[in-house]
Structures are given as structure tokens and as C-alpha cells.
Amino acid sequence: MMLLTAALLAAAQAGTATASPDYSKPSSWLCLPGRADICSTPLPTTALNPNGYGSTGQSPVAKDASIDCFYVYPTISRDRGVNSDLTPGDGEEKAAVITQFARFAGTCRTFAPVYRSMTVGLITAVAAGADFKAPFATAYGDVRAAWKEYLAKYNKGRPFVLIGHSQGSWMLQTLIAKEIEGKPEAKRMKLAIIPGFNVLVPQGKLTGGTFKSTPICSRPGQTGCVMTWVSYREKNAPPPGAVFGYADKPGMTVACTNPGRPGATGPVNLDSYWFARSAMPVPGGPIEWSTEGPPPSPFLRTDGLVSARCINDGPRGYLSIRTNADPNDKRTDRIGGEVGALGFFIPGWGMHLADLSAPMGDLLSQVESLTGGPKTASGQPR
Image (cartoon, rainbow, N blue to C red; front, side, top):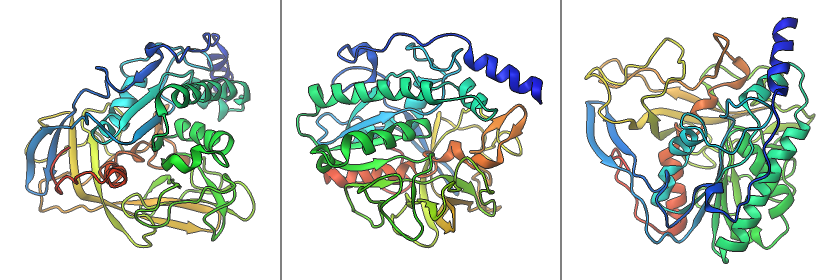
């Protein structure tokens, strides 16, 4: 174990961070409105229904969206060193944007800065005792600079939604606390969708803790609030000391908003979008999405295959995910989401990789509702 720890620390400390990006240059953004990029490229998507594969369509791209979406991607870079370089990788930063954010181009103008994120190597080494403060400051400094450029050049008083996951949610937590709360921008923040990283609140409360005044979303249609959750498989609650889902401060719990219906206390069926060609390991082996054979497109939409409910029990707070398996229909009875490392699945991370996929359709509906835009029929890809 000591040799493994030393190796992880050495790998994380190798290399140096590149110079900070210039966000006045379009090349420092993965997505910007009004140009051809990975957010303006429609995603081929097939409906997967109980009776098998349905229609295949292309995700829409709005031409004149009335709201902006600002996205920060998660820990995805396998670059050497503690912070990533500024060259987005196809299977790294670009893949995160495509699977987690590009679909929002159907309802909002999309902004996704490239930033010197903390690397997979560093996050692994932190678990072995490495310090993250300086790498975090580098990453957050970039996100803050991109945000300032967005406000100065692009926002022009428009309403906006913040979207992140994991490290990206951590960055946006910090941005809200330092740059949005108590400032004019707070009135224009319609939603912050930041799953995959603990937001703390006093037990039984919706405000306080991580944020001074920004509440946790607790009812459909609420604005100016934060949607947050960390996902765990049903009957697999986060253990004490878990990275996600267990508060490390007395009297606190981890906030949870049900993304299917904010404020719901019971299970809610989710409208899900899955990247069916993911190479991530899955408990039980690769998923057979349908008895009809391989998926006809890279993305699949399932409505009600999984359901979720928020659970808060003392310091624990998490989204409990249930697969609604039916041996008599043609859909898979399994989904993935667990994080694998060194041949094992990490118990304290839950279904981290499914945080956005499982409720993606519901999140699209949440943002659509802010614009008064048309809703897509249940079961049909978008």
C-alpha cells in the first residue's frame, strides 16, 4: 500500500500547469453560441421502450434561445501533473461536454470554457494524502476568469443556468458563494444544476451551510435555487466517511433535490439519456441494452427505466436510484454508474457516473420550462 501511495503521489506531482487561458479568444471555449462546435452538433438518439428500440432522431439545436447555460466539466483529464493542459481530449473534456451538456443546446445558448481542471491522477492521489489547495486554486481561477469574460462580453443582462458535475459542480459552488450571492447576477441565475458534489445544509433546512442565502430547490418551477444530488444504488446507502453523500460537519446533511420532481418525497420515474457506447466498467459486465441487439445510435433515451427518491437521514443525503427491471420487456435490467479504479468499484462514490445521465430528460424539461418552450413527447428522443 505504501508503494502504491508513493506512486500515485509521484504521478500527480509530475509536470507543471500551463499558462492561464485567454477567454477573449474563442479557442479557449469548447462551446460558444453562433458557431459550429460540439454543442451545435446534433446527437443521434434512439428511444428504448419496453417493446424494444423505437425511433431514432437528432437532438435539436436552438437558433434564438432566450436563456444561457454555462457549464463546467468534471474530473476527466488524464494529463500528467496536477492540473490539465488546455488541449481538450476526445475521450476526456470533449466527451464530457458531449454526454453531459451538448443536449442543452436545444433550449439555451451554450458556454463551456476550457480550464486547467484537476486531473484524475491528482484526485486519486488526494485519497492517498496529497494536497489539492494549489491545484484547486488554479482550476477555480480559470473558471472565475471565464465567468468574468462571459459576463462582460456575452451575458448582456440575460437569464442564465449554471450546469456542472463533480469537480465542475465544486467550481460552480465556489463561484456562486463568491461571485453571485448578494450581487446583481443572483437575480438572473434561474437555476444552478450542480450534482455530483456535496452541498451541505443544516439538517431539516433548505438554506445555510455551503451557501449563505441561495436555497435548495424544493418545488417544481422554483427559480433562483440550486438543484443538487449525489446518486447511490437502491439499498446501498453511503457509508460513514464516504466522499459523496455523507456530511463531514456536525449538524449538517448533504442536500438532495429530486431532479425528476423537486420537492418529491417518494420515488419519481426519470427520463434518462444514456451513452450506449461507453467503455466505463459496469458491475456485472457490459450492458445488453435490448434483447433486439446492439443500439442503432450512440445515445438512448429511456423513460421510467429508472426511478429515484431523495433520502436524508442525519448526515446522509443522497438520491436513491432504482432500476425498474421487468423480465418480460426487451429493455436492459441493469444500468451502470459506479466508478471503477484499479479493478475495484469505489463504494464511497456511489453511482457517480450516472448523476446526469439518469435524469437528463428531466433536466432538459426544467430548463425548457424557464423559457416557455415546447415540451418533447414522452418516449421520443430529443
